[in-house]
Length: 254
Image 1 (cartoon, rainbow, N blue to C red):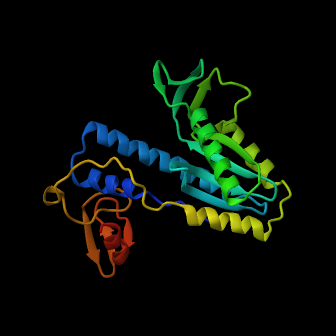
Image 2: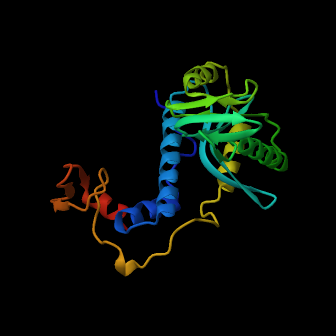
Image 3: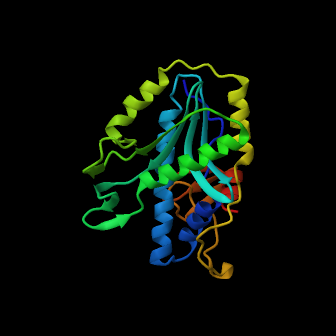
């Protein structure tokens, strides 16, 4: 049985625009790197969604929330509301070898990145204060999930709320088998959070572009090729032979 999320995950407008621009113009190395970063992050989040949607317990899954607390924006990758707990997950699709040393996070050999533990603590703190403001007293259990099976963290602190690739199944099974009975108050909390979700974030990192210089045409949804022709009511890619309804292809390229 697949559990339908209470709030589904969709690509951000920023990702959709960058994906289109990447097909239609030459992005700078910096912009392309950022675009790949967004794509990889979204892929990791969708991979985690495919796992949480198999949960058998009574719960409400809210994905991809952008909230504001005291004029401070914070993003939640996945939130699961159960009878007694709210589970907060920060999902990371890191790949390769990483090192934790002196409260710092490194992509080996020596490239320091933002510490996901600090991100988690900030997000949990803001969510807890938001809960206080809206009258919810449910406790929060926060974790960082490293979803990529090719991820390794050396010198990982044993007492940190990190869930590594080999531990994800066990952790979700434990959650899935925990008795849970939701009430109207749980649904009211979920509805409140969804109503507070900011759909149009005030920030993005889009490059400047000249529309007249962009490559025009319909791209293939599978391989991004422009070798697409219309056959009846469907679009067919000459390169990979992927087929898509014409209406969907047109809407996707608007």
